Length: 422
Image 1 (tube, rainbow, N blue to C red):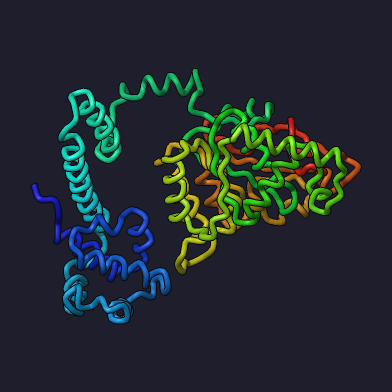
Image 2: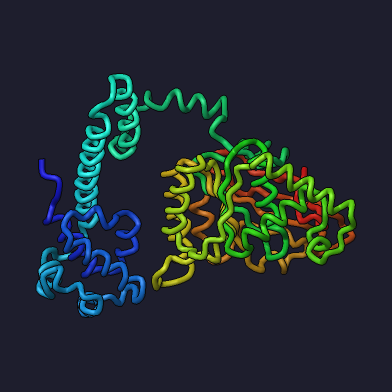
């Protein structure tokens, strides 16, 4: 069996030259090493680099200039090779077909490489060690070789566990909300949306803390707050001390002692809560980080704060279209990693014009694609933000739940501590 296809690789690259709008898709599913031939790896990287800068305006001349500037033209065999690629296909219509071929060939090579490593590593091992190593090898390559189409009977046991044990779900820790949403499930996109300053981040942090207290590892992406600021927020909340007073140095000795005790406890508990204020806010990079951290820390839930600060990395036809692309990409990531992704989102000013200021699902900012792609939508409302005499009650409205009822959950906001509680 052949483990490469020069024809398929050329068809992909030629198609991308003819239809540069497909480059983000190609970059999302193909890696440099998926191409067997070195000249094709170089061209693929050049297409991505030029595409990141000019988007759909990419043309062969710009790719040629990039290769010349980086002294790579000779390595691909000259400009004639680019022309040959562009002429290898009439259009990009069969991109998916050729991508499947290239990825399958790449998987074959990867598996063979793992098998050769297995043989070298077990050359002097005893039979028991060989069996253990073989099982590890099988586990590592099985996800890459499993079929997309499976029989119902293959899922009966997992379906039983999902319905009755709920062992793979993570919970918000807010009792009334968990009664409406009986756990966030792997593969789901959960939207938490609100107007600015209502408390999206505080609610997300409160949920994340509840999850790790239940021993569920959490990864938290923050594009607004730094990791230090998030840590300070959690320490103050756990110590029941105002973060504002702490920041201004107004704590008395008793509070300082209490805070030190909480810090020592948190250090000893070593909560599986992992923050990143990763500067790159493109979904491809976020997926890479999620996959890496899940492998290391067995992440069970991901928070992203917040959607409107993300970009796809190239020129797009509209912001609505871009938001739709981002949410769709994150949905694929959630399914691939089998984890829920909780995505914070801003609402538009629609609620401000209503007498009760109550948000609605139609207030989701930038795109109706958010509502369509999400599995659960939670809208956070604090009447006390608009009328201080109302008090500190908060409402989490659930206007959409793909596999469950809609409803309202009432919780309490503690503004001095910037946290939400039951």
